[in-house]
Length: 147
Image (cartoon, rainbow, N blue to C red):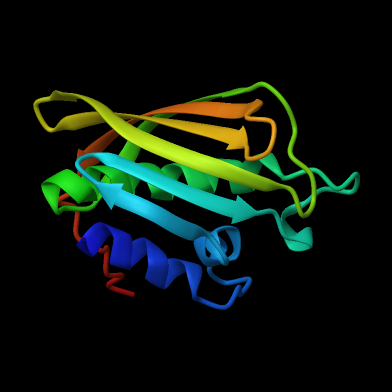
């Protein structure tokens, strides 16, 4: 439940240029988030499109990264960071088109967890992209400058 609440809180943040993930996630609707699986819907806003009106690939990658992390949070109750991300693109989604985002944890190997994220057009179910993410717990602490 904490995973779903965290993603829902990100969806309510007003988009600001200083927080790229808030720009990419603003307006995402969380349908479910439990047992290693997350299902969301998202209507693509104009500010995430390119000159031709298609959803930008960088914004797609950000959505995959965060929704993948939430899938892990729904089982492990911990936030992991992406160590490897591979995305295959199959079709383009346009401004105001609604997509479904589904993330599922697939495998656990030591401290690493694999998540697969599918993005499909809501109406036609055509595949937009598939992301494969390996994520790991990060024990790194913020670096403080001594200058």
